[in-house]
Image (cartoon, rainbow, N blue to C red; front, side):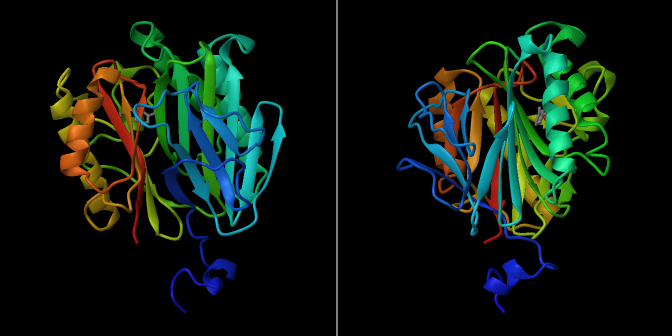
Length: 328
Ligand code: 3EB
């Protein structure tokens, strides 16, 4: 029986194949196998469908949409600040809330993670593989009062013990949309994936005190349960625990790619980011778009790319890349 065949999907002993992720222009309504779809920025369409999320990050260049699809019927719904969809063994859950409704960044993160963790704990698909977090003014405030650091504290409080076996892979980025809007969404399935750390980097949850009271709670990547794709966290020019090449975009891109390459080596995936590796690039200064495009043309010529304007959670970092690396 070849991989990907019917038996594979139906057998309860075999992990569900990963959703496919593509960047493209959607024709309009979402198809039945769409688990989630994302538009970027103020110009994005506004579909009244729980699977649709308008992300508060402005696109750089062509405004493509991101689409997650499964080979199954998808059901979906809403519940207060939360919306969800499920199909083919996969679960998408998103929360959007306003910090002012909860008394600040920390309390909003606690609220969002509380909703998400209670929701997934009651599902078969309770194993969270991947999470994205977007808040505005992420670098505002100094020292322990920086908004990103407050977010980290609220996040871990709201998580409870749902990630007791280990943190999922994650991205946390600053948006320039509605002030006080917090967006968090996740991908989960019915069995654990394999968490992957980067030997070039200190694990985020072991970062020293200088990075805040509460270390960031994420893994560098997750190998999804069918071993068919690596879900890669936001990856930047961090070596050990330190930021490398402050202020040097070209050098940060090179260091980021070395970190990404190391994640493939560590996971036992084929080297290189080609057409099987849709990547999203978060760029702090929109005027750096040409430098990023030139780097990508040279080092990632076949990878589907989506560039967005976003702030990285350390103010000296200019760029971060996340995405997926399919095995085949
Ligand atoms: C870093 O390596 C860069 O707080 O969820 C990357 C990915 C980063 C996820 C998070 C933060 C997060 O520390 C920052």
